[in-house]
Length: 114
Length: 112
Image (cartoon, rainbow over all chains, first blue to last red; front, side, top):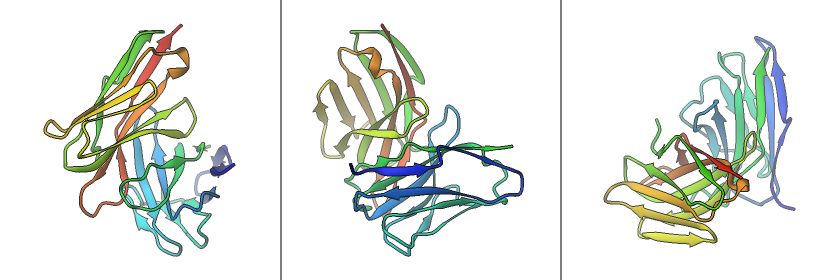
């Protein structure tokens, strides 16, 4: 079955650590996105990528980094510079960044700072 | 900044009743989309309505769009307990923006 896989489902980070969240898709989608969701809130865009080796900052990119070395993969690193990283992180993809396409989402990674 | 805002924030109805959720937005859009999220899960795309469309149906879902009022509504008819979830509207802005902006959602509870 085609879809997006996020791993791990739960992640715990100590203060000062960098952690990387995995996002893999086998839908042959060009565009991929990372969103952050806080309790009772909507989604806020962290980074997005339209093609391999290219990505753009979203609304809340500070303290995060991404790479897009392969079409299928768009990992997100939460760095120690992100002061409040506890949140639910959602990865999504779309056929391309044209505006008439819906997004397919992964099942999310819940990150907690301990 | 939030482009779309859903209303109400929470809605509780009995099974079999209809549920209506509203979304307002601020700037011109290319299309508006509705998504559903079960607790602790990812979002699922429900329906997309383009700016030149006024109404769209998909099964028990009916979406309307009023671009003059910058608002949309999602109607779920004959609701079921399994419809319990959060529902989000997302807007694709006209112009150069190439990503969706999501509202804060409506939490729907359907009581059996």
